[in-house]
Length: 133
Image (cartoon, rainbow, N blue to C red):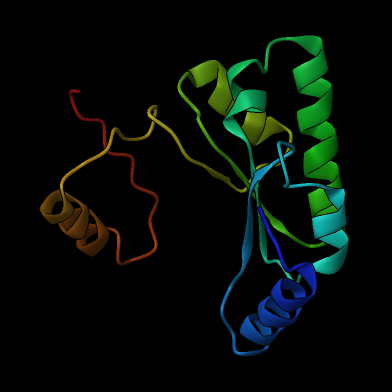
């Protein structure tokens, strides 16, 4: 929740001008709304997991498509959070998500495993790490 929206708008614009990428997390829920897209200098939009987890339901699918469409119209990178199944990954990719995030790709890992993963992916390749929970 943003308590001083004017200060937040000013700060995100300053960050963007400094080359720091700002993202809007959990879009579509709570305080993450359309007004944020209009006011904040964001680079990336993360679709909340609540839409992704129910993506096979018609209403969730329609909303996800529209969120992607709005984000793309504003030249934002689109990330789907909470991807846990191949069907969710396929759908979110098909509607234009640029990146996927969730347990399908990787469970949480220790910092040393993460560091090794980042070193291995330093060539820009896409890496999915599946671990046992």
